[in-house]
Length: 137
Image 1 (spheres, rainbow, N blue to C red):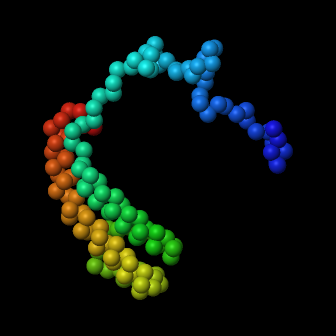
Image 2: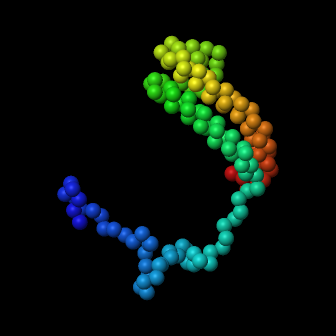
C-alpha cells in the first residue's frame, strides 16, 4: 500500500499476536517455561503507602507542576526551594510576572507546604519499615 507521500507502509501484523501452525495463538516460551504454568510472581512488599498518602503525593506533584507551568509561560525556570525563600516572590515581580499569577504561585506553594507536613510522618514510618525489610530496594 502506498500512502500520500509515496512511501510504502510497513507490513501489518495481527493485533492478536503470532499464531502457531494450527492457527491458535502462540504463547512465547521463556527459558523453556510454559507461560501458562509459570510460577506466580512474588507478592509486593507490605509497606506500600496507604491510598490517602498516595493521593496527597499526587496533589503535591500537581501543585508543583502548576507552579512550573505558570512560570514557563513567562519563560522562567526557578526552583521551588528558591521561591520559598523570603525574597523568592520578589524575583517574580522583578521578572514582570503579574500580581494575579504571583498569587497563584503563592497558593500553590502553600498547598505544597501543607502536603509536605502531612506526608513527612508517613515517609518516616515507611522508611523505617523499608529499612527493616530485606525485600525493599
